[in-house]
Image (cartoon, rainbow, N blue to C red; front, side):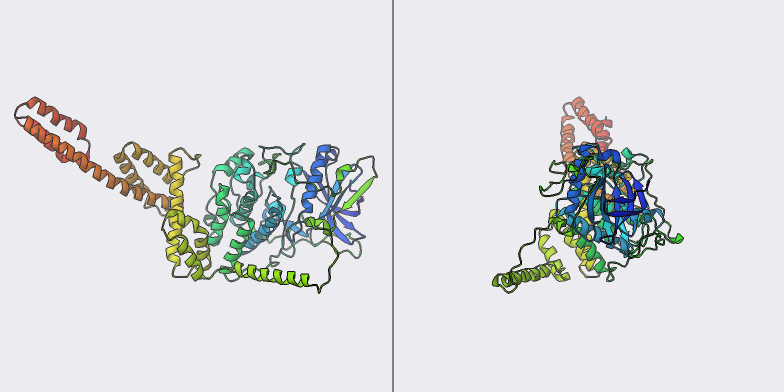
Length: 600
């Protein structure tokens, strides 16, 4: 049954329903404000621990005040039910647009990534991790702006108690590997999930195919996604590199912060000269519903409906709940707390009991957002302290602006040269970010070819270390390509018998080198095999020379011994045949021993 009012909001219509309860379009006639009013399930409102979690999550939302994050208006209780009012976003979620076949261009996806990175930077700077970045939580307004929603929702509805350690919480399809393993998460876990969203928008297919929730978790932990450009050929190589770096299994190999990601995407768009302006992403939406009061601007669209031309159909469809359950509950913050700290001066919604007044609403005023400090009495605008502070801040701003200007090609290349002066693989890896930035911004520069070779050397060195660790059993086994499997098999063989290793490396090269698709990791693996084959061959040649010299001495001794002890001399010659008959490099000396035996 549709309630007539919830707190200050007159309910117009229901606009959504899900595991978190019902969502209504409400209007605050006094404030002339339209809101999305979320009414939580009634059975949860009666649970003391749920009230505690609700209070903690509302205080989390108080810390957030950013144009790319859905804002909270207030919260309260009515007729034993808890509700809260949020900013109403006229538009639809990216999940809904994907489901309706929307085809996204790489420029607008990059711009979306920048806006989400800004929202995450704002949250991460305040110690808040979203934990559930997915297309359903990214809302696209009619003006083309992205807004991130549902901070704390996964935690709030995750369990019937405060979340505990070692459990899994989030949406499986976009969950970071460390999150899938129940380990502590950090801001880089949100960046992995964002990388998954950007991949899906461009590839128009899921990151991984799985038949169950557990299978999806396992793939997040161990399987690599297909190279993005193999399924979305129009995506620039730099954008592919950025997204695959976000999707690294090891958090240490992802971007360190959302700010670094934002700058990389900005730099990439700038290198293509025509970056899309904020607010230019447009959506065709259904007409607004009727029934709003005079004086209130109607929303332009139902947030759960969007119209997309039939020609923009996509192959990707969001997984159904029956196929992959969205959430498992329970995860602490990385510091072990069950939720954000609650300031003592915040209103406590859990204090509202069914025996109190029938309805109570606590608005969150703009001044409370982002934990703004209380206003202080204004000092005179013309005081010496004011002007000194203003000049100091202006100088700092100018210095910061100067420091943040991207370096020129010459300065950036000089910095790379200083970092890589010793020519080692380690120094190249330390300069990797600068090398990638140079290639993205100055692809036509004369130094670009050499830096591309350096980048290939970095990737080859990284692959070699990974395969060596797996061959030694020091790294958890991950899915290997056929070329990588042959490489590890040859490494094992070379440890036992170098000649056997040489044969296996040569066979691997003969088998796979002529393949047309021999690029990327497989191509690097072939180059590693050639390098190892050359090293082993040189070592083997020196070893064979030493052995031949020793056998030669024994045969000369047998020739002398035959004058006095023919039986002992024959035994030495037979020993040479037994030990070296199957060695191609010893063929000549074996024939010499056999000829001597045949002499009467």
